[in-house]
Length: 95
Image (cartoon, rainbow, N blue to C red; front, side, top):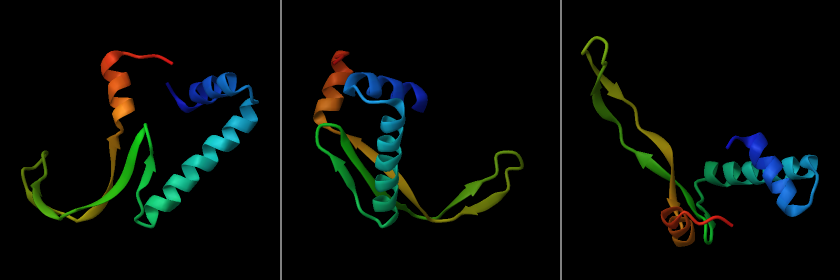
């Protein structure tokens, strides 16, 4: 499912227009990005938790040349699914 299909499905379920649903989805994504950029977690009970984690720098190899290289430290996004989401996926539940 891509973003357009998601917007259509949510608009149908919530009885709103595609324009309203698009604005809401874009707003949701913006709020999540802003909070995560600040280092905060975003927890959606029943769905899951988005968090920011620090990944340490490390030594690696260029697969093309075999040359040793340093991979710099960076922040990465993690997602831990909630119990309800995990159960729904495991059982193939559809709402």
